[in-house]
Length: 157
Image 1 (cartoon, rainbow, N blue to C red):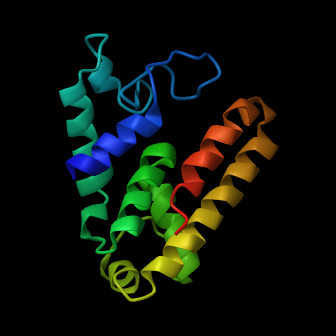
Image 2 (image 1 turned 90 degrees about the vertical axis):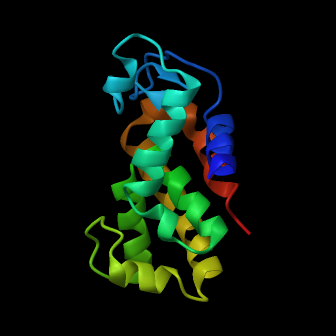
């Protein structure tokens, strides 16, 4: 998983504290809003960031159980960008099953099938549509549009 986390940190970019960023201060891609415990001492170390990614965005949602590497990486990235539950709900919508935000046995069985590349592409499309809805609903988020789209489109086969 180290390479996946390295890639996440690269995609997240440099530390920021943009007032229009709903996550608040961000270091190593770890936002203060989503991870206040990491910010308790005012700084997020590389080791803390990696531990948060591993636990909160890989193991806890069960993304490490997704066999297809590309789909697994996209789900992890989507989870970091929008929350693991949102990523799973979008995936379940594509699968036409109950969207409960839990990567349970039914979802895993369908995900770990020969359809994984097709599901990955459909998930990219769902992310792009979701991004469009976010920006349409809240035009102040337009400044993030190109970065969000570039990020989602990196997972097209």
